[in-house]
Length: 304
Image (tube, rainbow, N blue to C red; front, side, top):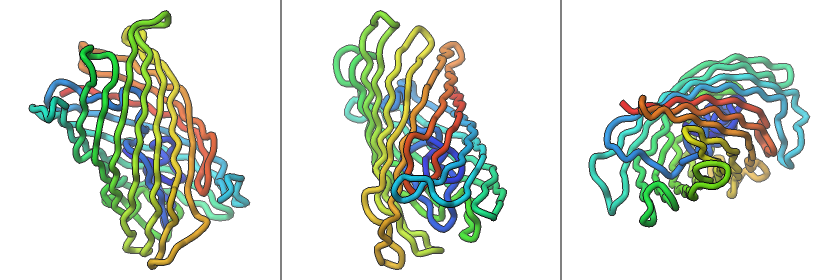
């Protein structure tokens, strides 16, 4: 569950397949974070999640955010399974959890006169440790805060000679924090929810290319309304590289990454199953040194 410079999936889906010579990882889980992003389940135990998605792109954007002169198109799909464990004890009144996720991707890319198909396993993403606590005396309403340390482990399929690889051959270190605020009932429904999540994506060195990507800051956000079992809103993210890349210890100027996407999100809770279903569409708004794409994501989660 992660995002990166990719010819593959948008939103978090642009997180799994990277152009092989260098890839830019950013953010958190595949599919991105959106609604209820600071909230962890109260009950200790295991929870499972599945994400499937499809993305198509015809635009490879240049350094100034304009269309590249390259003739580029791609279509791809991805599936990802995640396992969350909630610990049976609290820390300073907050809930503790650990999550690990992996999956694979398949797709086809055209770059000028070169065509390639690919398939492979993704890098492993893990929220090594998450801590979530509710602020205030009204459970379920008001502010929830989450702090986490996450990583992306270089375990995916990687080939530096190909246009696209599902792995990056690079470890990422990702401290992050999230906020969720839920109001009381209003004229539209049971409450307005505001969500924000900030990731600091710190890249290790790719030992094959001796390349280090610069620091990327990713901000995920959502606004939604809860109406009974339904939650309906808009979600998106903005990610931008804030330091230069390095190769062989030397600065590589003019190659900073950026992307912004947004789209509708709708979720349905099934409490009698301990489950929920979510559908999210993402549309590329702006991109720099990456593909601008549109994607559709379907999520299913369930308590074991």
